[in-house]
Amino acid sequence: ETGVTQTPRHLVMGMTNKKSLKCEQHLGHNAMYWYKQSAKKPLELMFVYSLEERVENNSVPSRFSPECPNSSHLFLHLHTLQPEDSALYLCASSGTSGSETGELFFGEGSRLTVL
Amino acid sequence: AQSVTQLGSHVSVSEGALVLLRCNYSSSVPPYLFWYVQYPNQGLQLLLKYTSAATLVKGINGFEAEFKKSETSFHLTKPSAHMSDAAEYFCAARSPGGYNKLIFGAGTRLAVHP
Image: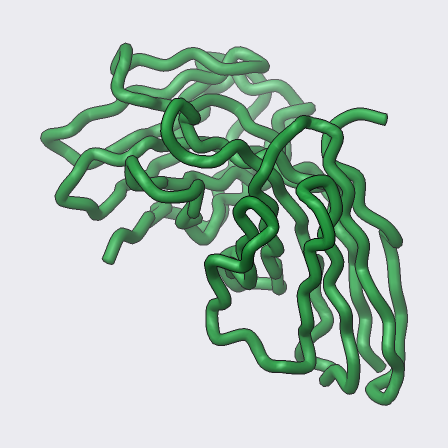
């Protein structure tokens, strides 16, 4: 396994379902990120975890609940979503600041459709 | 607040023609700057990055970008477009210090026609 792996790649759920997106990185990084990519909108940073602590939460609705059990894994738990939450959810990882130059390494994304 | 602006949401070029994708940033401190490419149904892949070393940065697939502080620009170029370059391109900026929070532009979709 290499890089950043996201599962599932595609997910269809009803508004009353509960599901989770999973992200795993094999790069030895200690920061992980969730981005939302909607059609015709810029990439939106949702959450940032650094050293397993949440360091940023960009006013994301509580129906999205992140979890970072260790530096290699990141989850996004989903419940009672709305159709406008349909989007591509991208996970990324990086080293922390200091000697790092700051690039993020992205997974291939999870395409979510809410019916 | 830092922002990134990409001029032109769609750019169309002929195969073999010059590719120029524009990016301007807004920051009082020159940030680290990046270009990413996204192919359909895939994540973002780093093309190149500027980190205050050389102002002309070469990346993968024949792309390069020049950092111009006076113009607060970081435009992406490629001398000769190939059909496989058709994708969406994102410019991003990060301020030195802190964790790696990247601010992305809205993206430019590049079409390459025969």
